[in-house]
Length: 377
Image (tube, helix red, strand yellow):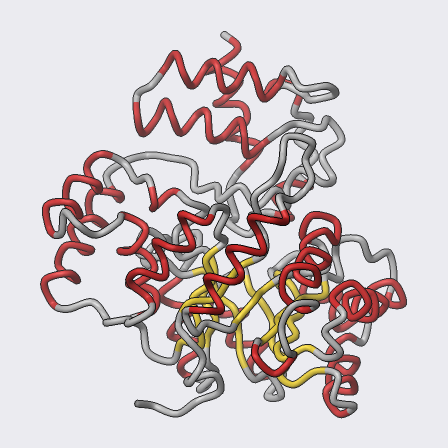
């Protein structure tokens, strides 16, 4: 086995971004604790959160469900600093680190990331002196390993890894649907990281849940190849089969999802040749269908002056485009835009802030016009 940073870490990581919630909007902490217990009992240790997830609720939930209940040497914590969200200046950005320490009670972070670097924001991390800041915290022992998460193309990734040889790992969006996607450039980014010898944490392996419930053409291909395997398992195992991977993050929202992931990742086996051929056929089927590549991360909505529920609107449109469920799609759209204060797709003023924040580089303004025509005509 190739030795690299994190090569001995289990290939399944627990993403604390999509935790189960109660009707009042708070986390279902009893279920979260049970999910953590099952994950830990199976021998997995990597937990991923961020300062901006659920306005800090994710970090606090990690403390309650994990850090307050297990010895610190039994698990690995990764969290992130975001210089372009909830950080009006360098001091505010740096304070995120100390706030994260306080929220989590972790004492130190095993993996610390500069969050969601892309063309429109990466300069902020230089402007605010954050590369030097995280190096200093690493020297103090408050950070074990420094990296960044990334949402742009291979040219910028190569530039950043060349300029910052201190980077020990990088977090990339990789899944079989986006491997050759020209907007996500998953393959090219993976190859850029490997060229620099930097190991990878994989995010969005199930593409925001889309590959756990894929289009009928893909479902038919994968179920024919293995009727017993869950559809999500194909996506997770595809990502985990790549060389140089530290772990594959799964944003698990239910205990059932945890147990399904554990059923095939506890004794992980890389894809064999027949399974790779099935994935290749699924990729061809996906490439033939037009859809909006939204993962519902909601980065686009925070600064929307018209308070448009963009991911929910795009989900409704995809239900039309991919599934041809016209009536249900209209119902989902109507529900999304009827929430208090929510704007309709036609309310878009084309300011473009959403496109600057979008990790998927989606032409959101154009698609909102399309959605307005589809749902409001």
